[in-house]
Amino acid sequence: MTKEQYLLIEGYMLSCMERDTAHDKEHIYRVLYTALDIAQAQEAVDYDVLICACLLHDIGRREQVENHSLCHAQVGAGKAYAFLRQNGFPEAFCVHVRDCIRTHRFRSEDSPQSIEARILFDADKLDVSGAVGIARTLAFKGQHGEPLYSRTQDNHISDGAGDKTPSFFQEYKYKLEHIYDKFYTERGAALAQARRSAAADFYNCMFAEISDSCDKGLEKLEAHIK
Image 1 (cartoon, rainbow, N blue to C red):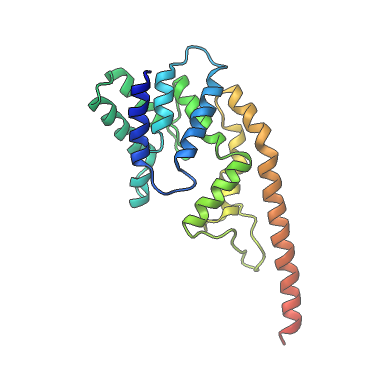
Image 2: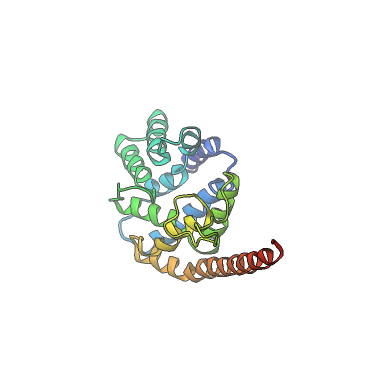
């Protein structure tokens, strides 16, 4: 990939990014850098496809925010294909990039097939693991007005497991806790495991602090309400 081509693709990515601290340009660069790390341990990687797919993998976020029935991976794949074709990239290259983007989402049954698609998937999932994943999830939940936790029917703090109401605890139990066995590459899995305890420790400490405070607080409150 030439420097001119890289800057063209990067410029298009930047023009598509919204003010979203969980999915901003720095997320894109982290995914790209991690993907290059993972790729070093793989064979026959098409780096041009990988770099392009990493840069453009979240360009469909705006459309998903505006219409929740849309999938940003599907939208972004179509946008990337159209942009690349309009700028003279070969058909096979455009299709390959499109397929990588289309299959990068965690909440999808459309699994990545090529090594470049699997590297992108792993690199993107790594950015929701560990301390960074906790920070991004909290930022996303706050931006969308979602709470840290919800309560059970008996008014205790829910740990998030099985919750239908969106919250940080619910997202941790639904996604963050379970991503560590979802990686396709050995390098991606190893990097994820190195980060795992940071996320688990944060969640466990936060749940313990909130539960203890609320349970004891309710007892004290009930003692004063006659």
